[in-house]
Amino acid sequence: MQARFRMLLVAATLSLYGVAQADITVPMSTVNEQGSGKSVGWVVISETSYGVVFSPALTGLSQGVHGFHVHENPSCGPKEKDGRMVPGLAAGGHYDPSASKRHGSPWGNGHLGDLPALFVDATGNANNPVLAPRLKIADLKGRSLMIHAGGDNHADHPAPLGGGGARLICGVIP
Image (cartoon, rainbow, N blue to C red; front, side, top):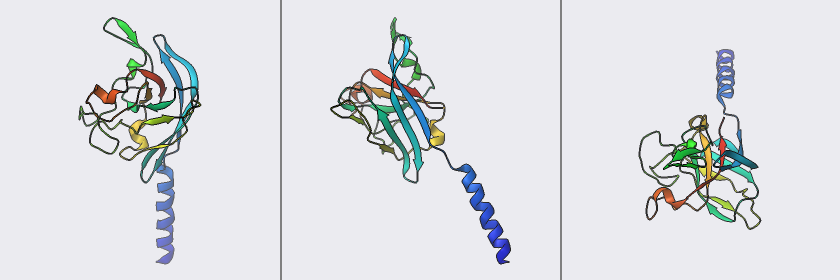
């Protein structure tokens, strides 16, 4: 009986090993009216028992707090809106599979793609990891990761979508 139990335990352990999610590295580049521009680094995405951790290794950004989101489409290209090309607009809106249509905090009940803000230091580097407790890596495949010009107050007031503004940096999540 013990040998059978051990074999079952080994088989269960091996099957769990096979479903473990590997880290994903997302190359990040500036976006403009023509498409993607200069590389600014990457973000490594890891799954933990507490949610998904986004670990940036980015350089050359403007100092301060920036909106940081998972967007619904796997594209960083421009798209026309109101007669002009808008950088990164092909990424679509914030990832919102439950159709909440509500911008909120990463811990709340708004868009699932709402992430904690990204902090850029005085030298233009972003390397502080952020945790998205409601996400799993499986949610992210075939989406994009976006950094906005301004900060994000995680509300739709006083400005829509947290006031992050223009889309500056983007990467497609494979």
